[in-house]
Length: 285
Ligand code: NAD
Image (cartoon, rainbow, N blue to C red; front, side, top):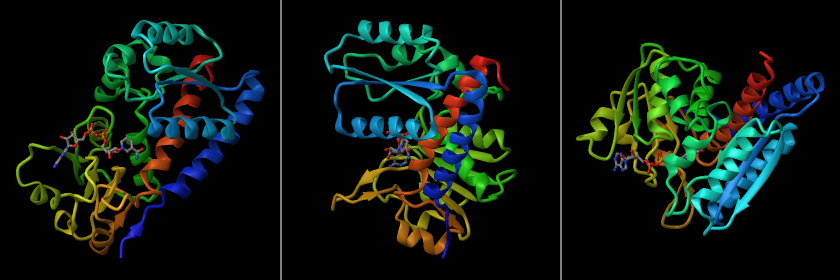
């Protein structure tokens, strides 16, 4: 039976550490870190994410500023709000909850956020810094994956890592991080031929697909580490990952559950990025 990588417990520990850090740094600097959270429209899943992010901020002593725009707000309105927040000295981080309504262009909107305040790490400048191996704000889910591997002392250097999924928010940045950590990285995707065979080569298998329980035991090398980023509902409406946990945990060496794995780490990394942006803005290293 695999070691269960407990993202919930690890995230709680990190959030406590951040709260302690915020307390000591804010007392010296005379201002708490601030995160602006923008939501356009009222997508129920987005509302849950936004609520959780604001609550996590409060618990860590980070001030959260919420901005709710109606579904039919114009892109111009959103860009004006972002520009105001770019200039607002109380705001260290700006997060625009995705997905945006169809009439808005995601790339244009994310590009409008000042890279120094881009705590989601989606701005092309931060993406470029990551891919050229420089310090940057790294997107939260990939950063959470790396943090978990390190916390559980899972060797990355020289290991074969296969990532299923090539999205800009998970697959590609997690691949860059694993490369930075000296893994030999393969990115697989929807057009990959003979996916199970490629996955069976992996010492570390990261699934970021969005297809309920697609990854079966047949994809996993005995003893491999399996990181399940997926958040899906199965036919019974139950929350499941991309990996069939019951059978995968019989063959893997270590595995993340869903829920309680990567999900909680994402929020912890958002707080961490906000404090990093705050420190940089205040010149506190
Ligand atoms: P996406 O839809 O943008 O990308 C999915 C990727 O999977 C694509 O690159 C596609 O090529 C690949 N893919 C699709 N079908 C495939 C198949 N049959 N075989 C191989 N590859 C296939 O999704 P995303 O935004 O990267 O999210 C992926 C999953 O991770 C979703 O379930 C999402 O909810 C979840 N997610 C979780 C967190 C978290 O905090 N835990 C954060 C972001 C996303």
